[in-house]
Every structure is written in C-alpha cells, then in structure tokens.
Image 1: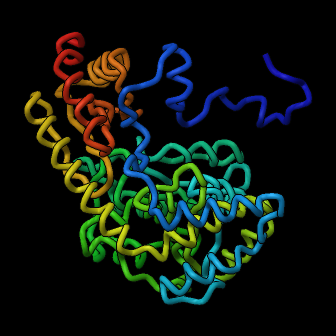
Image 2 (image 1 turned 135 degrees about the horizontal axis):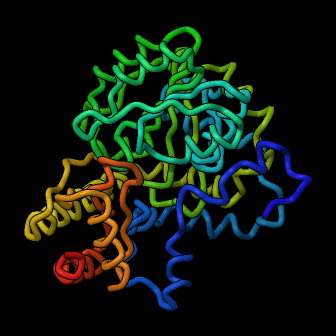
Image 3 (image 1 turned 90 degrees about the vertical axis):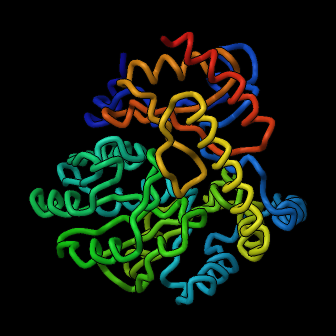
Length: 367
C-alpha cells in the first residue's frame, strides 16, 4: 500500500532500510542481548576527555550548533595538514554518502560499487533514482581494477570502495589505492570510504592530496573514537565538492554536543593508541574462537572478524539466528558468496566470553 502523493520514484522504493538495528531485534525477542557484537561499534567506549567535553556542552544544548563547525573543521584540517576548505562535515559517513549522491547522481546516472559491499551507498543511489552497477569481490577483497573498468565501461559518475572493507575486513595497501586513484576516468569521482583506517596496519592509508579532483575520502568518529551514537563524519577532498555540500546539507546536522565530543576525541591521540591495543587483543580472541570451532577467520584490518562458516548463506543465516536466540547479536554479509560468513565485532571481554560460550551450541543447532 502506498500514498498517491509520493513521487513516482518514492512509490517504487522498497520499504526497507540498510540495517535492522539491535534495538529492534531486542524488542522482537522481548529481552536485551548479552553481547552486542554486530554493529562494529567501539564497545570500549570513547575517551574520558570526549565524555567530559560532551557533558560540558550539554549545558549549552539550548543553543543551535555552529552550522560551519568552525573549530572542529579547523582541527580536522590541521590533523590532515590541509586547508579547512578541503574538509566537510556530516552526520556520519552514511549522511555524507547521501549528500554526495544527491550532488552527483541524477535519475538514470550510473554509480559503481562491489556486490555485497557496504549497503548504504547503494541505498542512497537507488533512493535518488540512480542506476547501480556492481562487480564481484576477488578473493574476499574489493577489486580496484574491476571497479575502475566497470566505471569506464558504464560511464559512471561515482565509484565507491571502502579500504579497509566492510563487510569482509580485508584491505589494500597505500600503493594499490594510489594506482586506483590514478586510473579514475575524468567523468567519475572516486569515493574512498576510510571508516576503519585508524585501526588498520601502517601503510594502509594512502597519502592523497586533498585537492585531487578525482577522489573524495570519508572518515568517521564512529569506530576507533567510540562515538557512533554522535553521528559525526567528515569528507576530505577538492574544495569545489566540499563547498557544494553546503548547498544540500542539513544546516544544523552536526549538533553542539557532537562537535564538542569529536573535537576532544581528535585531540586525545593517546586514547586512540589505547583503543588500537584493546581492539588488537579482542581481534586475537575472536580469531582463536573461530578456529577452535572449525570456522575460518578472514584476516581483518578493522574492528570485526568475518568468519567463514564453510557453507552457503543459508548455513550462515541459521548460525546467526541461533546466536541471536542465545542472546548474542552478530551480523552477516548480505550477498553471495560473502554471505557464507558471519561478522563479529570486537568488544569487551565479557561480551566476547558470551559469544565464545554461545557459538558451539549455535553451530550444533544450525546443523
């Protein structure tokens, strides 16, 4: 059933969202999860300096936020050694993806991504009337050569890749990323989603000139900084694209508390190193748990481990359901052949303990 006042495009869109939130799943089950390991949040929490800044900012929440996010944009620009004209803010990378697609994709225009890659990009392309073209992963990695070739073949205006990748956790080194940027055709813009790069090995982040007109990089405070609930992301790229974001953005989208928390988190480099150590230790535990239960962990440069369940998507879906029935929230990729895996986020030891305890029974029941 639809409303006749909707646009023709809106009336044809599926009544779905990219993700079903854990809160919705808890409401359906009538109880909370014992382990929240499915959303790739930082379960270790944010910096104490960020928490203090947010508490202080709460006293001024009666004010509208600075729509220019002046202080935060300048701090981010200084962090990256560039002019603030190359930094744009938005409500997480998800929000920025929507703005960028709105700016670049007109109805019928083509955008390219990998089949099974982070779904929010595809969600926005479809929602703005664009046409989505996909290429397969190669050995559980997004394939830069295939993506660029399809971008050329289809005359696409946008090409999306995440490095490190979600949902598989795999990554390319900086040299591979540079080669991909060099191959971007004149008619296209490369969207390089670097949500997890703060957790990746040295040599992953490519040193790209922010003024390079071929690429727009996307970063977030949701992962390593532990501020997923604030919804703060930023784009690094050519000044004309960054300036165009102001034409379509939600003017007060990044609120006062979010700006204060992100500013303090960015300055707390010591805490970021601490989070990396906690994440690495938790990652090691998840890898061992997977192996101990006959699953194959895929090497990851993120805050999650994709675990190959040794079958197709139906088997992984059964394991996912059985874990959920035992109070453990994890997710799985949505497209074959990636959907042979479950994806488990790192987190505090008690939650990883709950996953370790539930997994053997879940696997037995899924058989």
